[in-house]
Image 1 (spheres, rainbow, N blue to C red):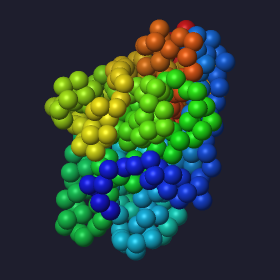
Image 2: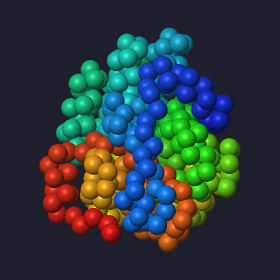
Image 3: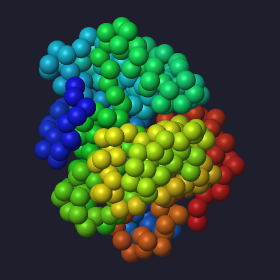
Image 4: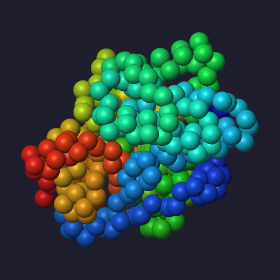
Length: 327
């Protein structure tokens, strides 16, 4: 697949046609409790209810559908901290295409086991995502695999953007949408949909304070890389900014908020108490950001992405026991 093509809204509609054969739209849940706390009309887009418990399954299916149609690969290799890995492994199993995933050290065991149960091979390399990606790219050259870039592939962005198309069609009067930024496909999908269909809708991104490469790039309007990452939210633990999402977001996104690990933990607790839904730290980042900028959301209609729910049971238990929910 080409990484030079720019994703389009037409591509998002085509992705929905592909994905709808395998996935149903996820719930856009109105939360009375969160609406009261934030003095707005608050909706949660529950991507944690996907078969792989994360939004990236949309991109994986869209990509593999094209690979299958073109008979383009027998083995696909990619890199991931977990949710992208499951999406590609799930789609590979669906279409009968071999999958190898390079994952950095420190990925939660629940995510590794989930990938293995989908019959994909897990290769461990590096300390964080970007090192794993470099190794996957080298293995592709050495072994002749098809390398799926987990961030710079347009088909992934168009597949992921279908979740925002669902939000827009169900709540066309939404005022603000908040989406986490790890690699950036979710936020770029948001801008692709809302800024094309209704530019008045504000799109706000969220990064971890310990992994602010995209935030710094956006502030300085130049691609930046940090020396290291320091966050336990593995879904946000990227040390650099990638060209495709940066070019899509640099002039379109309205704001980017940084949140701490503690704030994300509090958001996990808050989501659970308010709705009974389980979110991983990255999946709760949008909620953490909403509480951080609550004065900007008053009396607005707001959609928050619960982008994933793959969290170790012990970590979840610790958060629910030891963190303080927002009030």
